[in-house]
Length: 303
Image (cartoon, rainbow, N blue to C red; front, side, top):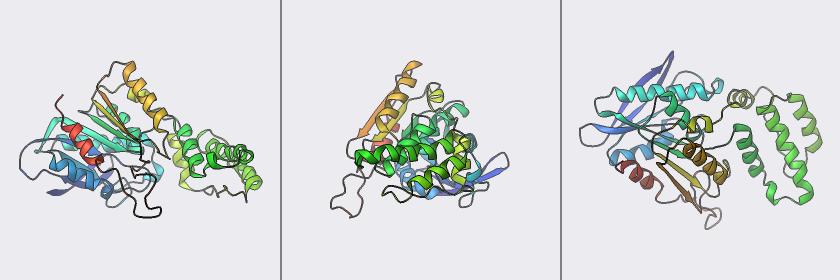
């Protein structure tokens, strides 16, 4: 069963759905956070239904500025997105089907990265599931992601240094305050190389969003999380460095005594938990088959 809902964060109205178990009653619940970009409720509907069959109420909603939600994600940073999710948690707590003391958080990619911020802003959470979450600062994460996207590791040695200079120029403008003109100089130097791509134009929202999130430090929030945490990664994640992120988040949680942490790394999966390599190459992408069930089973476990 689903129910259309709206809730508000200050002057921004968010629209979404409650996905409910089939049998009336009161249940634990969770809010689904968004990945980067213009993501709507559709992105989490499959997982929400899986959790509903396991006895959870799930809140999925359109990111601000997407679908039926007001506001604009392109002029917002992590604080605003976290406050939207916190408003969702408050909304859940007021629903008659929800056990208000048992509301958790699920986030993938950007959602996983800001999940500890949401937990802190909400004053706690019953549990946190962070999937493909970065444990590094945004500049480091972006460097990893862009270098992977142009395949630096596969380039001839003589090309690798130039490609890294190009990536650094992009990241310096996006996250470290460098002038766009410095990137234009580098673009002129490397345009035409096999690995080159045109960076976003000066007025693109990529730059303004990057500036808004550049100071975010996830570990400063992870070390405030006291709830049980499930960290999930694909070993071949091309967007977030999986091992470095897992190690950093685990260290932050352990530093303040949170030992209720589970880590699962899928050895044959990438960022979206598609199986790699594809077999046959170019065919339909297959995802790891037990991802959804693994998450729901962990959330169901008594603690």
